Image (cartoon, rainbow, N blue to C red; front, side, top):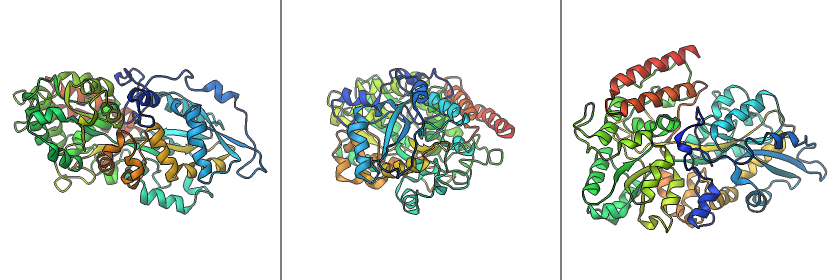
Length: 515
């Protein structure tokens, strides 16, 4: 399964060792426990690279929602893990049980697993005005550019979507997820299928050796800790254990750094790419402040440099414990950073829910896996901007949108509504590991009974409530690559955070002004 990010190239190291959700289920031996790789990763390609032939062979369907017993067959371009029995026997029947007419059936069109490839394919299809596929599985990291190009159907203007469902999205879903499915005018163009939020994962055994116990773990589950305390705890555990790494994360110069890891470091210090996120996160491009050179942003990089190079290196912070992260993090994406942790070679690890599922398996860390929200440097009250400070988590996840060229838009909307039922969302969590997009569902008994993931629902709920989207606009792909390059360079041994952020500000300004 791929993630929720918008990669600019197909050679990202994140794809090394990428596997599908179904393979995760098999790997941990717990049916229905796989949590998908989301956030900023990719995975192995399915045999049908893009499904072009499959889509061409599908003829136009006729009829509408009520077509006298004839089938209206919709095509859903989605992830390969939905194919076969998963959809036909486990998931589609739930839609019929929750109001979808049995005259409507949904065929799975398994497309590319790499998010960049999927985005490019949709761009090609929609630009050509193709009527198939009818429903599009869209990355929350690049939904807005399709919206501003008028390439997705406006659900707010769909006669059969209805105020009841609109209110459910606005009042019950994770707010950050819904924000990435709306246009500049506030209209809805997609429905969140599942969100993804990172957490800080840790090995309890190593921390017990450093004098920490269950009361600490219980406290951290809902109230993590400052980055300063985090560095202290990690260093103490390194000093009391024979372990290779203290803290592993994703620092490679790729989308995952700009959208996610650095976004969290910076936001947890109260910094932002474009000033107040409530006002400027999604634009207007060319008419918003660029604030990457502010002191709190520079300090967040100095903190990372301290973690990697120690406080005796240039451009570091004195009151943080150093050399808790290996220099290798500057080349690591999700999987290379996860493997040492799962294998017992690291104390702390930042990653998406899929990593909880792998590391929490009985043949890995089992119940010795601890999970807490992302640490922070400033509280929300201390932070300069709203939506920053505290345990900020980068937002990942996927939505469903309707192809405006479809001949069956009314039926497609009915499918999206049925997918908003609690039963369907729970079944997705149980079968494929998709997190429910509503905070309340993460507190239910049914969710708690899901193997492995059910142990960590409160941590995931808190992460979701503190999630911040990347600043997705039509120019974000160009900006993201510049951010990743400058931050990665500033993290290197000879890097200069202030200089790098001054250069980055100029680069972002140039992109904004030329848009």
